[in-house]
Amino acid sequence: MRAQPVVTLFGVVAGVALIAAAVPATQRWAIALAILGTLPFAALAWTALIPLIVTVVAAFVAVAVHRTSARAPAQIELVR
Image (cartoon, rainbow, N blue to C red; front, side, top):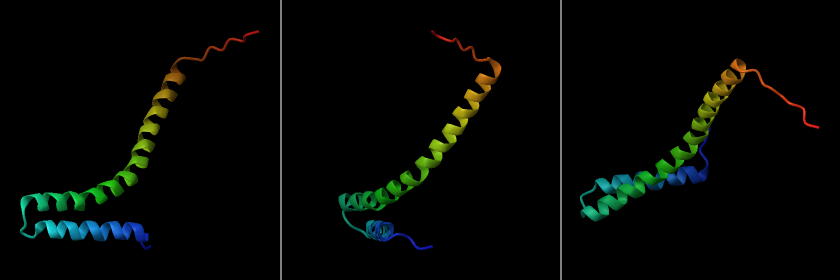
């Protein structure tokens, strides 16, 4: 399976920035390149992890609601 071109471009730019940050330069440039190198990876990881986290939280909420509703029978009143 091949990565999409945008994801590949993010990886290349971020990787080059991280390698360039390791080359001796001024501290300001090193910090800027390190940030430029890590932010794309952080953004891609965020979009990959958030759906998983939401799914896990939704499962915990569903279990809690199910247990609560199983203990207390629902009382439904008909309104006329």
